[in-house]
Length: 312
Image (cartoon, rainbow, N blue to C red; front, side, top):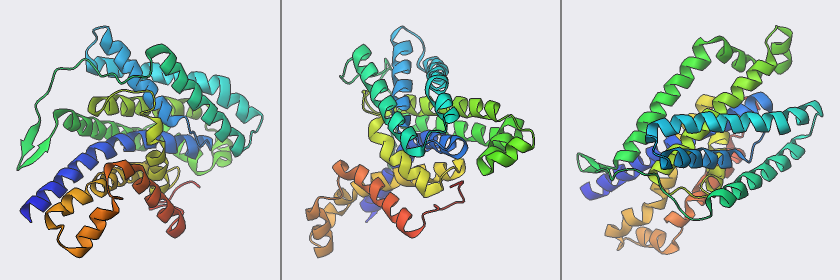
């Protein structure tokens, strides 16, 4: 039983690491919907762009942490370019939500294939020294996973301060609650839109760079996270950044624990229920995305507004 709980805690720690990455990127996704009413299916590929920019800067000899800062700046530039070329013109034309979704899918394909054209389709890794895993009470935490969790906490704390204690943060919350009312009270909506893309692009780039710390950098890495990202946004309440953070952590932990249930139950495989679960082979790493989908479907059926109040 001690081994069972030890392995369970290990899976939860792994889930917190994965959930931290999902949470950061989900914040950008939920902000873009809450303020711009844009369901951006290219969001996962902007994560990939951030990871590859970090790879680029790191490959030319720049320290990995400085590379991540430069990557965030470069990714913000790409998001602002997409705003100028795509989203702003579409808002002026009052494009429908369906049109915006189709455009975002096209943008995702463009970004992914552009990455393949420049960097190729193979797996790549940052130029990092091998770091020893840390052990706490029998729980092993790879150093990079610990770094990911710490970076996520710092970024979330910074986001909280910005949203609660700055003029632009208060303006963003006002626009998310009621765009027309915010405009009539004198809030510069265009400035809010600009800052929305800056925050979303920066957090998404950081999420992609952090994902590259714990797994290989590859062209479809962000696309495979788009389902958990949307699941996190829906679970936390669409348009609610704090809800997206909570949803991301829940999805990350649920995926890791769910995928490890078979291994957890192996020592008691003689139990009929445990044997049934193991033999179904549904609770394995191959079905991680299925767990996110299941959570999303359940939330939509039972509590479509999410766990917290959103803007939708």
